[in-house]
Amino acid sequence: MSETIFGIHGAALELRSQRMGMITSNIANAATPGYKAKDIDFAAALDARLGGADADRAVGSATRFRVPVMPSLDGNTVELSTEQIAFAENSVAYSATLEFVRGRVSTMTRALKGE
Image (tube, rainbow, N blue to C red):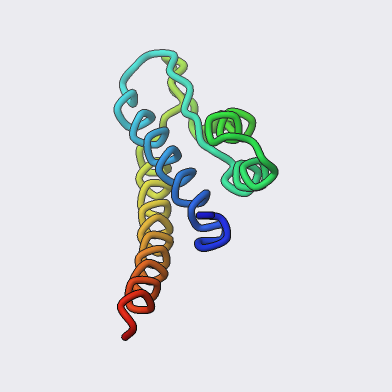
């Protein structure tokens, strides 16, 4: 039922949340030797999710390792500026999707109240 009410936004919100966790993990491991930064190809994950895959499988199939612009000597591929930009972009997209879902719920609540 949520897919008919919220469209792709429910799946998008779930995937954006998981991407946020992946980006924060990258930031937390910025000083860990040998750590490989990962990200989610959001379009591929959303396509997989809408195709019937559960969220974990969709994220797993769309996870990519980042290719650093300037590789570090210890093998760590986290670049804080890249991660901060990805975090900010994902936060804005998450907030926009959440506002859409809130608006839909608000509309349904008003309709149920007869307003």
